[in-house]
Length: 504
Image 1 (cartoon, rainbow, N blue to C red):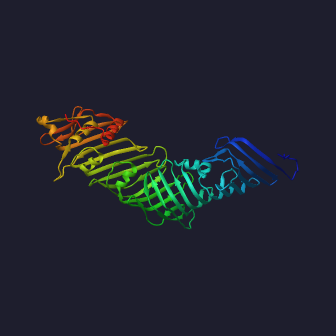
Image 2: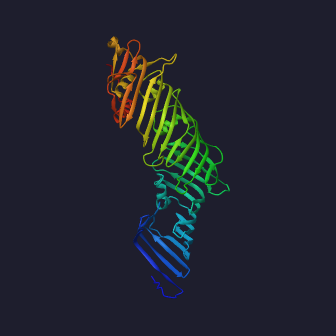
Image 3: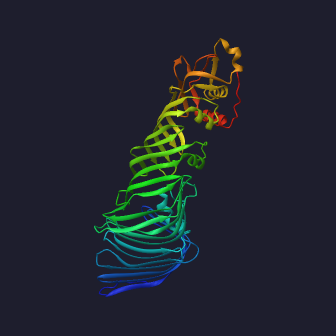
């Protein structure tokens, strides 16, 4: 590389030469910009005069990786073309009228930028195209996508993007999607056939656009084609009208959708209203690997808000199931697409048909009606870690209350209980079912221990089934502290029919 020797009264000086990189690395003082194992060949032209400085870097990079803030780039072994032109007048900030990046069909980008005198970004305009998005995420997007738990997302298709930024943040952007498929390897979500011209502006003049997809999936639930018409003004994206999305035999309605991209220190903020109508809960159960529950899912959430990697739902959802109602309230979901997602809710059950419920669960036969509550439910990575649950039968006119021998045995097995009978106990084997006055059971889960309870207590014992008629049969639990994983194993065994009925 040539040298620039400064001499008194010299009108200026320059330097021009070639730079070859083999396993090169660099790091700034606070490690916010780091490069490792970089290869390539660059030509550098640097010229300085009394009042101005100009520099050009041109060539290609091969392999290696670098990190700049949240941007992580893993370069391919194939050549990536690069050209940067920069100039500076006096003590003003640098101007970069041309930044060119050429990575085959994966990423072709052209940009211009201005830096403030202190080196911070004053303006940036970017135009980019990807004809093959499959390598785009591992090469260029994993750092940004990883911030929201999408670091492994798979992309297919083509896309054109423009973005305009100033010192305050994003002022305008557009993305043209050409048959893009977006899939999560963990199966949490997926969209096929994404198309549209999505536009955003922070200015006062509104711009319209639309986004559509052919089909999609969310945690195993398949939904159909939909189109979202957007309008953007003042830093917001709004859906211009309510949208109906086909979902599992019913519809998912979206309304009042407002999206605010990250600006400055503030992260993304998304708000929307949600309505579920006529969704087949049998199809939902099958998709989620649940027992063959039947019913319709309906509900209305006036407002849901996503911010700081957390979704909070106002209102609630109502599930019509087993000829009764299950209502969900106080719903919140943390890290919906990140590591160990966490859900919290309160659940109220009213007038469920016990016969239909127990037959689906393979629990044995119980006739009657059931009320219940699950308060303070908390799931981490979809596994229960805390709740306070209580269930009790609800006498109803004209509804028989009977319990089969198999159900009695299963309740006893699951709840560490024993059953006792009246003086007619010697004849117990002659009866296939028994009358009962009430059934009640509760579990307060904390630290993987379920504190059991029932209808009433006497010392360490608690009554689960209170008998009625002849022979009169009751079920009493004697162990109030039950290990939760063990309890789950027993419930699974009951559902599989691995617990054989025993008459005592």
